[in-house]
Length: 255
Image 1 (cartoon, rainbow, N blue to C red):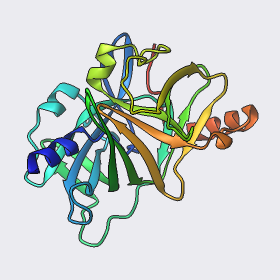
Image 2 (cartoon, rainbow, N blue to C red):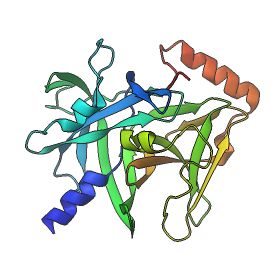
Image 3 (cartoon, helix red, strand yellow):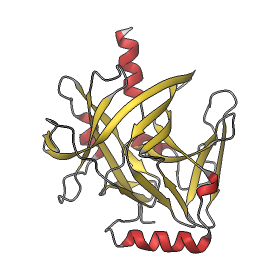
């Protein structure tokens, strides 16, 4: 049972978004932004709950080299989440105040990381050829923006709720071109779930709801639920995207 729980923890996909960015090597002709996480297990809701730290890319050269990150051995009671690429074009993350006694910044194997929130709960909904799929609740206050012209990958559940892909392990970006439509069509999803992809004709803005993100965690891929009704009209989308530029954020890739 312990080994089974460790396996489930190992396949949980990325669920926290850093407030700043770092860049990976060119993969399939694209310069992707990296998402690096270090997680501390907590007793709140075992085996799922953990405290999340993200690499601080405000420090030059601090958050690079996916291969080196993936080779690190975590300290006891911690895990390193595999390096991931970000599918969204820009985003904001209001970093929370750490609980009493919890450091806001830590050092790990030469990396400086910042406290970014807590992974609260998860439920296994299916087991497939690649491993279990999980529905998770993550306490974070984020807004993800996908620009017009960006290819997005989505899944829908049996109730037709929509989830958009926001991170993928580096190996997935190496295996398929994530900027191309239908590149994930071979996914074996749970019964009743459907995959689709499209090129956006206007910006898609995906906020969390009341500070909690609902994440469909497929092995190596993470999709966030969003309300279709919240997609802004073209004018609103343009204004919102322009406002983000003032926060020093950056596109996820350069073609």
